[in-house]
Length: 287
Image (cartoon, rainbow, N blue to C red):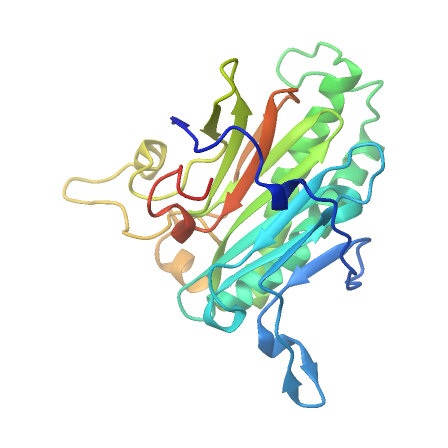
């Protein structure tokens, strides 16, 4: 959908250059925001900040980010991670029993998996020899990189799904965004949303959806399920990571994401990634 957003400029807190000390997680600049219980200091939980802000760590791009919670960390199943130097951002939203555990696992592992898959893909098929898989026509440098990114997102989600099914009892949705020279790449699974804000000629900002929540309201999911007479889609998410028991009982549940590439545009003002509850009052509300 396309809807008018409130305001024509980024809020001031999104435009400030704020340096934030990071916590090492094995991936350069990866900051994983988890529940209070996972940060122990002499037996006492340490509060996760309500909001963090900063820059991407790249002097050329100066990608700025702002991340916040609408609830205290111990009262939610949502997690976010930021890989500053890689310009990667993820929001994971737990579903049902043990969903928080699956969300924390996915938020920490998905950036690593996608980065690893991208490197391996680039090594297997250097961009100078990449071809279109359908036509066999040699791809230009930018299209070759874009193809590698799209494959990396698909394979990274698939690997995270395999690990989550094997090692996690719960389920979660995930939103992933990478800002690369060849474009903006969004991977989504579950019922969260990603919205892109673009400034129009009259200085208004319109927001376009870069994801389509996987639920009963998604016509593509209704077609994919091939419903029998009298059947209806589940009331919750129809795609998610993990959830081994649910997928064993209903094989139409799946862990494959939607992947979208958006070319860079000088008019683009922001990308908003949010859990389902953030959008309950409409696409304009978070903006």
